[in-house]
Length: 294
Image (cartoon, rainbow, N blue to C red):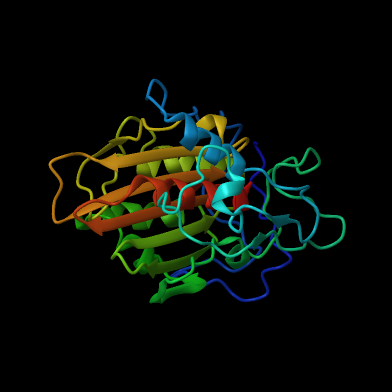
């Protein structure tokens, strides 16, 4: 993971919409040497419902990783999933998911032949689509977004330092999508692409923190702790998850968050709701987005 070359994604014809983004192909970020893999920060020791674990495992089953591979996850009938043959288990109805086709000769990020774990697909096409019944956020429609939009998720005191680190670590561009469900649950997903997988790990550890609690707090969650409700590492394969839940007592809204470390891309999933943000749709959303990046 020591390569810091700027391998441009062939499928990203449009210029990135970062506020001060470097030109495509220009060297960005500090030179790096070999960077150790990020420690897997996983929630262990939590009591996981057997039915939910089986559901999650079924959700993550997908076909091969060839061009246009379809995920049969979101469209499964509830009765097709062992242990969850109920009318309302809290899951959302996502459209059938497919991986975008790659140019000939290029491989997906965690294939054996993709040494530097580069996503060669258009980052916008790797964003999880909104589920059925959602109202799309007019500022987060699935395209490129600016640094300022991403930074607005964090408490004001963290923004100047985080803005500088976006430049220091050579973030190439940011794609984002958001929506609100009929019950008031809001979801925002950001995908940040770097010039190498090693820079993703370094940025996550240095700028955001990868411990029991994130160092850089979100606006909606001034204090958060590791989510111990699931054995996340058993469900995501090569993708590393850092999942946090807001510490009680909660404010007017309950905020859940997850960072997804996947090759040259870092994902942020934020989900909040007045009163309480339900666990099942959050887990479903995080796992599906992880699979699209894996």
